Each structure stands twice: as C-alpha cells, then as structure tokens.
Image (cartoon, rainbow, N blue to C red; front, side, top):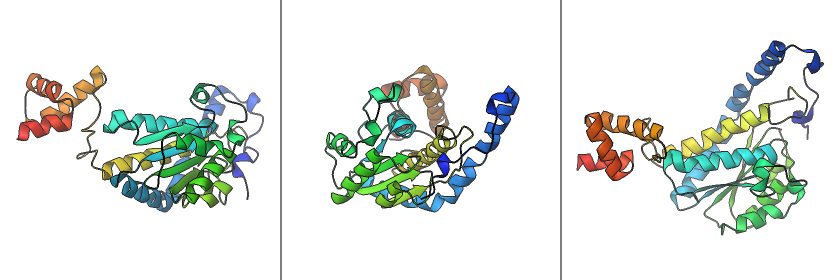
Length: 268
C-alpha cells in the first residue's frame, strides 16, 4: 500500500516561514480535508446504517485506536451522553494503553495485536455490537488485531483510516477511507488526518443518534442539563415548544429534567 500520510510535506523550510505564512499554509492544507471526506460519504453511509441497525437492536458502538486516533474516539464517545442523553455504555471509546494514554503517550501500546480484544472483553462485547477501528495510517497493530478477532466472533466491524488499501481497512467489513495526503509537518497525522477523522466521527455519531430519535427537529431534546448554559438553552427550547413564559418553562424543565420530558408533560 502507499502510505500517503507519511509522504514528505508539500512544504519545506518551515522554520524560515513567518507566523502568517505558517498559518496560511496550514489553512490551505486544511481546506482540502472536507473534500476528502466528501469522497468517502458512500462508505460513511454504510457504516452509519449498520451502527444504527445494531444499536436499535440493543447493540453498542465501540471505538478502538491508538494515539491521536484513540483520543478522538474517546472524545466522540464521551460527548454522546451529554449531547444526546444516552447511557454512558452505549458508545465506548477505548485507547491503546488505557486511560493513561489519553494524556500521556504509552510506549509501544499500539504494537500489541492482542490487547484490543482484551480491552473489549471488559465490556462483554457480543454479536449485537459494532467495533470501529480508528487509525490514520491504517497499519496500527492494536487496531488490526482488534478488528480481526471481532470478525471471528461475528461482530460488525468498521474503520476510519486516511490511506487507501490499508491492512486496517482490509479487516473492516465497513471501511471508511479518507485519503488526506501528506501532512504540513511530515507524518504529523494529528493535523489533516486527525481533522478528517474528527469530521467522520461527528457525522457517524450524530447521524446515528438522529436515526435513533435523539434529536427532534434540530434540537438536542435529550441533552443533559449539566451547566447553566445548557439549562438556559433547554428553557428556551421548552418556551418555543410550549409557548410558556420563561419562568414557567424553567420550572417545568427543572421538574422533569429534560426538554423532551418537559414538553411531553405539558402536552398531556
């Protein structure tokens, strides 16, 4: 396979560029990412469809990855409960090296082909679930091994990679390949590749949650009211749906704990 993410940067002499030149050139590279994601939309659709199907039938979504890729999976998973009001075990992000690796790199954790399956077994993974491997290069042993073993146990598998024809994509039943090309700083896949992976994760989890009924209209009606900003947002949503003045909407929201429940109670 051709590892485009490791190819030499299109730019050289970075240390001689002004701050503005650095920013302009990074921005020029970033502009290409959304177009690369667009080319992968048919693949993303297939993955989102199977995830929705499995989750409707009681399954869960697992992300596995190492380094930046693993951290992005953890971020997306951790944001689903507060955004969509789902249980914390519906979407699970697992990073090679464990939670310590979220803040500090764990040496050689990504090279263990058996560890991902061990990590997944902690959650009693089963045939209802989906495992999505995230790996910019598409060559991470931790991810390859996890997907391979998941396949042996008849678990649906997907991936998000940034090279074409990778070993990770070969293991995934529903691969997503977003070919982002060389990074501004050669090999630094926290840049364009990371941005592409984040965009795909946003698309995947958001579209799945909408299909599962966790959004009404365009509003996060099941969001957790975990700070004043969200309480105020929820109050405005209740006001819009019910026509109540602010104080009554706020009280109704407080009584029922979510926008959805507040509106349903009002409409009874």
